[in-house]
Length: 181
Image (cartoon, rainbow, N blue to C red; front, top):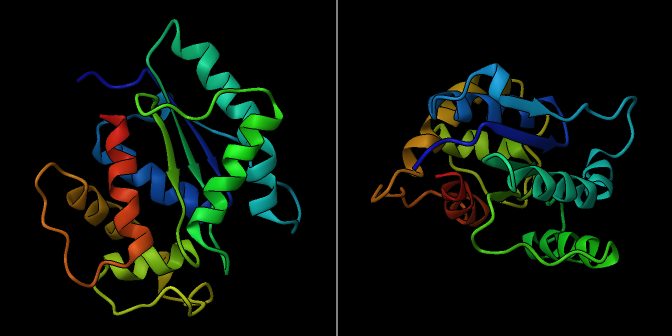
């Protein structure tokens, strides 16, 4: 299957963006193939910013995909909520704009780490984690983002064995990333 000519990334913060950039680099995407939506300025809520821009981003994706292969990756932490709560928020966002729900065939990827992306990064680097503890202030995370993204790439390959230490929100993200291929 051919690659998208453009991947639009809507993410909460720089760590989310770096994780996705390294993953997409492993898929063969170059910087000019990627469009990272500008991050919110200041110290406001990144998750709220993503939720507010989700509907418009889906509209842009759907307008562009009719003329060129396009993908949209949305990365938002579940925080203390359930992953399904974030999915419901996305669904409602589309309903509120009069848009159809995400179709199975659409290359709209939802990556929703529970609790934070740092939980995924540590898990992908072989550390024992749970989805209730806040790992966002772990100083080692910065150094582990690239290897985590490359390990996630390996886990998303067809027929890959997912290790038993894989946490549920990360396991749910595997078929999401396969929407790109």
